[in-house]
Image (cartoon, rainbow, N blue to C red):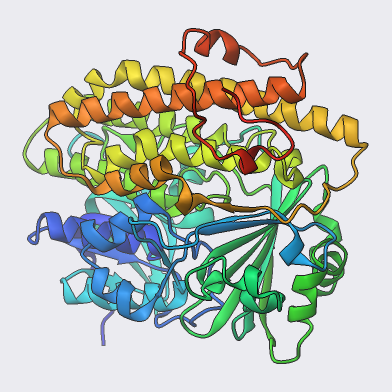
Length: 551
């Protein structure tokens, strides 16, 4: 039998993981006649649970999977509905029920899910084939030759022991950290965020609601659903995640500032467990149960990275980890897949309609990088703050508010490519970006002052329950993400959101100054000096710990 001939296709997607398969589905939903080939290294079906990380979704990614790709039924029936984020400031503490806890007592209105990545990607692989995509699994890309002018690109790959090639008008690198096109073109770019991670999966689910026999602690939630949250166990310079998977496993990961917790102290399972016994002894007690048998263990050094170019007028693009990756805290990975895939689909659609895409590629890239850089500020220099039970809860509220005020509604409303609306929102984005940049610097300074006063000692166990669901405006802004508005009403809503950010920034600054009158506010005070005082704070008094609520 002679080997298969070359593939002739409109779009060759290099990588059939989450980013590549979702892009194929989105392109087919946009234009069922488009020809797509996905070239994937792994052979399908892949193993469930112990496969890949990136299991927690937030609002943009969840909307993308459920609504843009039309996969809501699979998410509801085959994955776990997420019970929000939850944070415990529990470094070195066995009695987690006596630590500050942030979370929701009831689910917020906008849904999200915990993804068993193996199960999800198997489903996506089957679905792409049903849509008519040429999904070549068990294949390895060997070379890429980019065409010039209107000439097709050529991809050489090995499959079933044979050398094959695909000719395509478009090439999209979705190969993850293999980054085949990114490496070929020398597009790699570092960023100033030095963090490492280790992760593993175990059999069975860990049940945080069983960490205490105290009835009042158990009744903080309407149902015993803490285990369905993405649980963050926080300490200075690190956080540990706990994410349940629908196949019956639990995902555990440690993410650390490289200078505060070196990777060589956690880069094997035995080392990682010794580290957990020291820093999160209650988690170690659960994991030492023989019922939680180890499934896998992996680590990644210096995982955060940028890229010099992701969208080209020469009909190539990068998406997912092949382009940029920020940090798993707040789970933005699937968000940025959703945003980049949306821009790529729009560029391909315009190209197929005969439009010159070069100016659009430039504009979309500027927008994408601006979203990446503004989100990166949430992480850079912030890891020392993660164990501060006084300041970190306020940072969490601020970071959520920033995300829900502009980027999340922009995406969920389908306006990331609406240049007219984006032009009208330029002032709001500029204002919000300046507020956030100054806020992140001020929060870090607040934490440094707290550490200096405490001498690095852990915060006292104050048993605070910080219920995000009980903050009316916070719950309302989450619910408003799905509001259907015309352009005028949408722009007005975004402007109102920035006014809310002004108020919150002024209140947080007042709280910081009350604790530390000589605080360096890094310019935040100048930004909010004209924000009027309000009789009632946006946050309940307990959110400020020992500090009084600003009036």
